[in-house]
Image 1 (cartoon, rainbow, N blue to C red):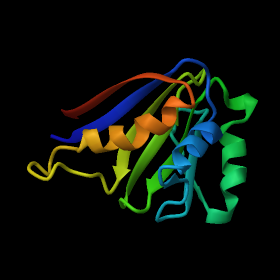
Image 2 (image 1 turned 90 degrees about the horizontal axis):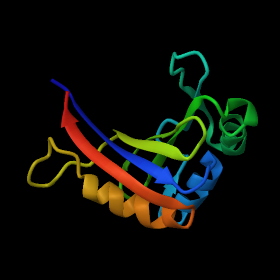
Image 3 (image 1 turned 120 degrees about the horizontal axis):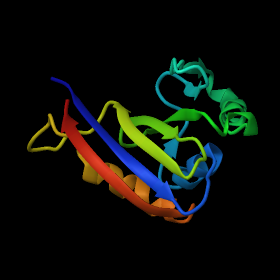
Length: 144
C-alpha cells in the first residue's frame, strides 16, 4: 500500500506557472528547492522532469508557460524553505486547473505522522492564491 495526497485547485480563469509562483512567493514559497529548480512539460506522456540551477528560474518558467505547451500538462516544484517542505505544482491543459502534490519532505500530522497535514498545505497555499483567481479546491489524502 502507498499513500498519496494532493490538492486540486480551480481558478476562475487561466493562470500561468509564473503567476502562481509569484502569488505564493509572498508566503515563503519559491522555485528554489533542495535540488535546484525542477520543471516538466509532459508532451510525450513520460513526465520527464528537468533540473536546472537556481539562477535559471526565469528560463524554466518561460519553457513551462510557453504558448506551445498550453495543451500539455506542465509542472514546477515549489518549496517553502522556512517550513522545509514542498512538492509538485502541476498545471493542467488550458491552465484553469492545477494540482499540488506534497512530494518534498511532506508534513505529517503530529498525532498521526503517516497522514499528510493537508490543513497546513491549504493554509499555506489557498490565501495567497485568492488574488490569482482561485475559485475552489479539493484536498485528499488516500491509501492506494
